[in-house]
Image (cartoon, rainbow, N blue to C red; front, side):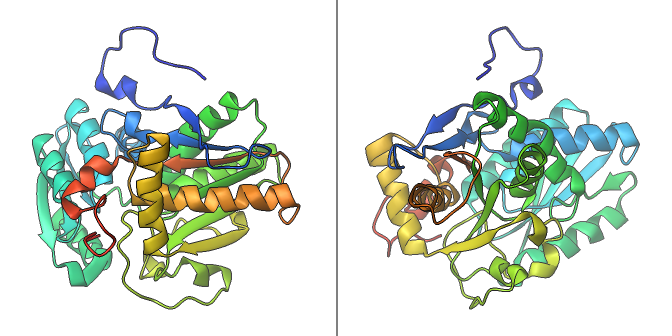
Length: 326
């Protein structure tokens, strides 16, 4: 695994090359490895797409230095884009449903961005519409739109995937990741399938989300506390390619909450709810490979721990399940 062994010129140079760490609760015969994305300067996996998308959009002339980037986001993407925008001479505006993490919104503002809230009950669909409305009101403004922009998945195809495979000498049996925009999983899956076409790929969502319907599986829509993954409106999740996915697994909030607490107490991982859901499903996949129920090219599973639990402490993530606000 590579590390940053010399001084860097910019915070943007610190994005990526995050640690890949074993999940101890996995079976010894089929280890699970998690990419610890809180080691990025903006403390989440979304730093990768913030840097990658803005650099490519500047190169293509979609926006010019001094222009404005407007993005609908639940928070971490806003922070990642804000980190990059500040270093690339771009202004940043984020449209965020009210119910999402107050900590994330504070950090976006600290990085020099403007935050516009939309009603929680209107979901990400309204946030997306509002972002485009604001872009039309400004000169030289662009909406990267992480939910539909191929650069989102491309960022993980170019960075996250190669880093994981380099660390494991290309011996990856299965890829497991939660889907919000689906960019992370799609980029990693495409990279992995090009190396090993029979790589087993699993999407993770909270119970109450509807990604399973894109694979023809029944799903009952409902509210969930897990943040950063899942969808109530699959029409906004344009990056998800069912052909790249073998299975979609839904995790109940109560199980995710318990795993968040276990990961901290037993393994020292201060990670958020999406990481906990990923951990549970990745471990189940490892057990399936061990038992022979799942056919994979290698006896190993990789996943991502997208961010830190510190951004959700105000929501009671380490209290009782009933106290967790989500």
